Image (cartoon, rainbow, N blue to C red; front, top):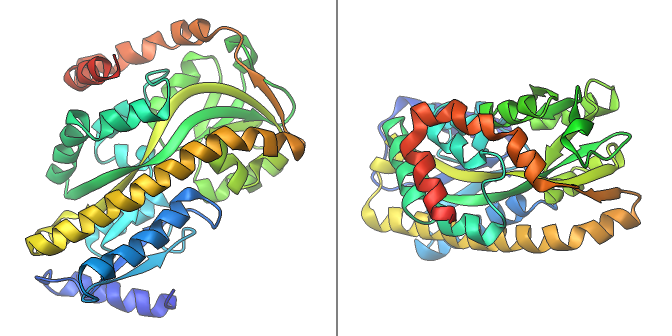
Length: 323
């Protein structure tokens, strides 16, 4: 990756000039580290775009939160400092609240059913809302079905979560879900999570197994309960002002590259999620299943009631699509 001074200069240029008809370089930022499917997919995207533009457009990947955390990256995309980001559902929901509804508790059973929903009418509805807010959602990469990890115990029943100090992303639906379960959730940037867990600020956290493993969180919170309490996407977003300045061929190339890399990322997420349990157990993690899934569903029913007034149409579309 080019040095940060070069990136800053590129960003300043983007802010002071009109969007070009054809992009010479795309700065594509994300927060994942090597070993995470998001990191690998971003590298694939960087290879695909020059291939379909005949080398006219290149991609400068800025990984590992080198351009800031997810909220800061979204701000930079909105301002035109960077062109694209593989971001997170929670931070995007602060701008496009509808995307947060994808994380309603116990909405999805498995990843393939999620992808079918995201690639259909629901995804189009969210993209339109995002465009109205100045962002283009090119596709949804995967951030997995999420589980709870704890420093000292498994949490197979809702009662086990009572009073638990748990880190969440900056996502209202996730916070509401854990409040309904009796926990004490608080948001924190992903990059700050390991230190916060080690210092005892939190007893645990919630993430898909791929994220837990790639960040070595199972070494800090080795008790992992397969709650499957929610799904979270990785929306790949672009600056709408920049996107609108591209010709149709370039738009098509970039969108197809993002979707192709996304299928690779989704596949990695699915396979890693299935295989990582054995690996993590060999490294000292202790796994548990929930004892009664319906008890968790009943305990979080109020979260749906909380949002149906504002997002009833989208929630109905989600329920219909999942059935």
